[in-house]
Length: 390
Ligand code: AAL
Image (cartoon, rainbow, N blue to C red):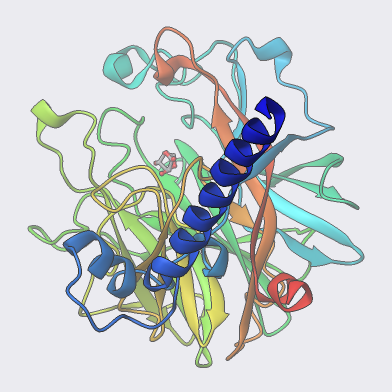
């Protein structure tokens, strides 16, 4: 009798749990349905329908989690801070291998730190990216890299970049290659960061690179948002033109050092050597740090990393100018340089990205006096992957 009673009791409990589960599943389909329900919604649920590309992360083509893998082939002088590799370009595939360009500093001592920039001289760097050159490496699989050496050295004084050439990105245009980069004329930490963008070109990704010996994206006029610096130049091809996105670093109030806000603008040209016309709606992205964008369907997607109110988001601009938040993400690749097969094809149906190279800055007593290492990141921001999974 007792056994029968126990059996009945357990069965009733299990049955009611199951009923509850089913009623939960059936009771709240509006939380997971793509259609906005016809009932009053809280602000949070309303926003879930209106503010992002999709109401669920797994349905959102511009949502991903980033994974990182240590690269093989790069040595860092034992990590003593004298050798740095950072701010990689996009990755391109040419001559049967992948190419990446990056800021390379190999100095007698590590940097003194931007706050002590006055102590820097011709051999002592003020910052991780001071006294740097642009180097490049190639790889057959994206994991094992072979460093090839310098692509763009520092030009002689007083040419733009004599102090440091850094933070480069690549454009392929009508069979030629163009490297855009920050051209420092003073140490970072003094007024060096107020630098413009210069360009070098070559017939082959292996060089030799010829400096155009001119500033292609000049600083904005006094009082404009990009008067101080034009950083992180990032060219893509759209509508038969070069769409070059860049970061402006404008909040120079000393009490805000380092500033937690930066924005990104767009400059457009029909010729890689300019003139570039800055978009009248600039800045077009209200947050972020280094620039990372890629064609996506008819528009462009941007990884908005680190600074500003909309940091840690992936954004989308159907018209390549007016960006909306598509998703909120975490552990984004700093200075990400993705492999974008259709970066320069003027695609009207961008397929997205699955991997690239970014950097990590090694933490110590003062981040300014550290070095950075290149790393591989992997993600699922590719429509081809989604198509395959469907
Ligand atoms: C980076 C980039 C630019 C800055 C400095 C070196 O992350 O935004 O390149 O000037 O930091």
